Length: 448
Ligand code: ADP
Figure: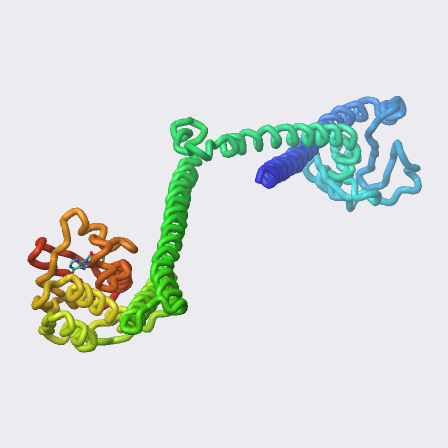
């Protein structure tokens, strides 16, 4: 960046300098032309007085003049010329300055001389006898003037180049210095400094981006920790049924099981295998929700989905002597049917699992202006107050042995929470120990 600033400043100063030089040269050239013309006129008037008094003698005495002096008769014939042979010179009556002098007493003109586009300035004065005295001088063309002044101009340009180089370097340093000096760890500390006023918006942006980075970093670290914990928990949860299965199998293999106990042993092996299957299914579900994989969003009716979930749990409920009922109304919404099913299924499954014998589960679907409401109310054991926040954590169980006994994985409510958030909804829980629990899920019709 400093290179670009330096180049910009330097180029700008050189362009300004050259433009100023050209303008000054132009103005001086014009000024000096005027001075030269005036001087020529004065000299001509003086010389004319001399010639009027002393005639040719005056002219003969003139020596070492820069001027060309020409004396012309009233008829235009040249009587005298100090730089050419007057006899060979043509008649001058048609010359502009001569004509003007004859008519008005004084005339002047300017003509290009043959050489190098220099100009010839003429000044002519009419003498009392009708003849005309003319003085002329060569005025150099502007560019030959520049050439003539070549050495001093080069010197000035050189000084300007060096000066602009030094100034551009210093200026660049002064511009870039505050930016280089920004304390990236604490950009707002420089806010009050006088020279930092122009970069205050930049400081604000650095500050907010830094905060964002810190937040992201914390988020990444937290996610990594959760993943790590999750993997550790998963292996632990899988190990338990695997050990049990392998233990039972070993006993059977070594024929250490009585003939009559073989059936219950096989039943235990199946139970543990089922627990593993459920665990793997839940993990797959959670991983899918976590990775934000492709979800099939479509228009659906929450009531229809609830009907399916309740249907598939009816046998489980009956086995536990729990009555499960669905009521309410159709609630159309836009969502992922598979995840909505998972929400209802897991909540009802828990309501059955953590219920009393002869208890009941009441599933209700309602709708309001925002969307659909799902209420799952049970007459079960209830959730202690201090655990209500934590039940949505992965592998959190209020009573570990009870959860295992009823085939819980500790992942059901995490899946529910994830799926609710996916739909932009929220979940609330009310519970009374020993009396029952109600989960209330609010789902918007359309996720914004
Ligand atoms: P789990 O597979 O153990 O049921 P969940 O994530 O579904 O895991 O639930 C977490 C814990 O919350 C359960 O272990 C249980 O202690 C408690 N819980 C969930 N639902 C209910 C309920 N309806 N009644 C009482 N306790 C419940």
